[in-house]
Image 1 (spheres, rainbow, N blue to C red):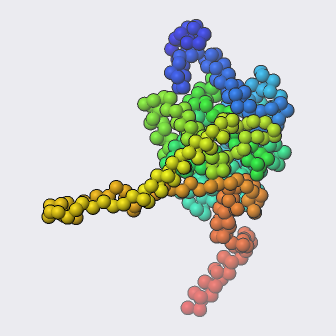
Image 2: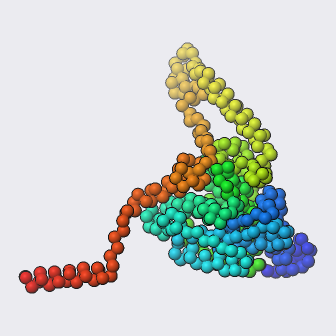
Image 3: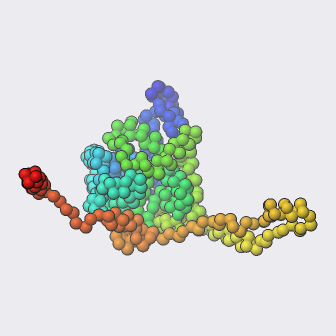
Length: 419
């Protein structure tokens, strides 16, 4: 890095360009500013309270590794009084997750944090390698994502922890916003943009302390702090729909660096218009504290949404009263024009608005975990997988294989001699 004048401390040092605001900043100032911004996010959103046990969703990647490092630093610097624990999910992907878990184990030693590993195999009876062998590489990320979200809750419940933090950054949130817009999934948009998600149907809440941190900033922080993390991409993820949203956002970022936070802010603004009963988002209060962003404006948002709905209903009612107007048949020219282009004020055959499905968060009838349906998505996916799995497994031992081969050879020799 060539020496330059740092725009923060105004000292000539080797400086880098901050992706967030194109600011020239030296290494020392960058690390300090990055940590201060995470601290401000934590304080502004009241993410933690003293004495709370926190499970850090650790995958061994850059995001969760930086999250663990920063939380440890801030916990000691600002005296949060938190009890931090690493929680890892073993999806059962050979050549990927087994290697990354070795990184997590090293992080646990480096940061002095206890580590708990929960596997798909023990929770669901399937590994992701087995799932991919069953369903193929298209759509496998749906299984993994659904299973992982529930596995984090199960792992936290096993540890008796009610708060899980994940390493989702601004790029991840922007990708999720873009995916939900492309799919037209309005109810899920509110849950995706909230920095804290919780529900009365579950004791476990989640938060994203890195929500406003760029992915490039996280990489720079990990590089300058010389953190030990795993950087290989999942071998099954190239087919994921998220990859298309990621490529689109990266192209936008090249043209406008602030587009990532702009998309996040747009998602927050759109989510604020969705009533909680439709989005299925968390209630504002958790353990007697206001833990979500913007809860004080909930009534205002509901009123504005109600006004919008009333206006739309009024417009649709007015459309029903509109009539088709035909020109008088005074001349052949007018008749010909009328036959070719009938004049209508309102086309009643036009497609109406798509109805927003109401979602109410509750508990799955089968497993008891959080779900917006009677049966959660994890149980539904498992049911489909288990239908094609044989109830009993037939195992052939080495001795049986050798015995059967010997019998075949003897039968072949008898056939030859008889011939």
